[in-house]
Amino acid sequence: MSDSNPIDALTALEAEALAAIEAAEDGDTLERVRVTYLGRSDGRISAILRGLGQLDPAMRPKVGQRANQVKSVVSTALEERSAALAGPAAAGGLDLSLPSRPRWKGGLHPITQAVDEIWHIFRDLGFSRARGPEADTEWYNFEALNTPLDHPAADEQDTLYLVDSVLLRSHTSPVQMRTMEQYDPPIRIIAPGWVYRRDTYDATHTPAFMQIEGLVVDEGVSFVDFKATLAEFARRYWGPDTQVRFRPSFFPFTEPSAEVDVKRVITRPDGSRHETDWLEIMGAGMVDPNVIANAGYDPERYTGWAFGMGPARIAMMKHGVDDLRTFFENDVRFLEQFS
Ligand code: PHE
Image (cartoon, rainbow, N blue to C red; front, side):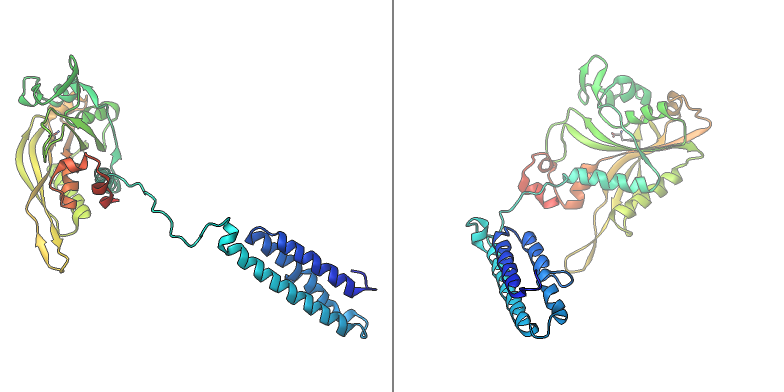
């Protein structure tokens, strides 16, 4: 701006500002224009107003008046442009006030959620995660686990064979042996995975299902450790009032063996509390010394406990679902309740 003609300079500045406002296509650009001309610290119009004191006293009122006028014209233009950019016309005729279309949001399958929650509790108790192949040999699935092939559990009716002596594992217990072969004690693992049986598909059976194996082996491990760990797991998963019951049972690879039931306390919507029935959640027991020996560990020195848990059953119990098949038919209307 030349000192000799501040009024002309202001008029030029006004035209320049108005052109920049008109050219701004979005709010960010418009904001930059505002700062350039009207910014409090170094906006070009603001600077002129601030510099009035240095002008010849005779020119001061005129220049001041014109500068204020330019400031107000530019402010009004900024407001109008800002409103226009936000309005429907600015979006090429789109009505930006229309509610958006609903979008599908994915979620974890309820059985996956149960597996994760269970695994996370054991992880917090110091367990690692292990895995093994779904197609395994008779040795790992049966014989190494102290189960002769003529045992009813090894009967072909229950097991899906792929080729001679290779089968789809009928439980996650083969991961016990595979882990012990690979590592020295102490062992503390959780091994979730798919298992397969020749079961008829009905409300409580599917030919493929998830199991979660647990195994602890070390010196001096006793059934008391198992009971305490299981009780702690149950309280963390279902709440502090959960009770755990051990019933004698039989598995070829554990001695003694047990089936574990839980009884929960649920709070009804009206606030009343109610005890559920006992529900079986797993087979378990002290690892048979023959299994410890098959792993190459000294059975005089090492003892352990193991369990095989059914997360689908646990998810059914948790969500009050009474037909296992609903979990596998992938009807989104059913599944989306859990995400
Ligand atoms: N593998 C057994 C089953 O599938 C469960 C189990 C695991 C029992 C570990 C004892 C110890 O039924």
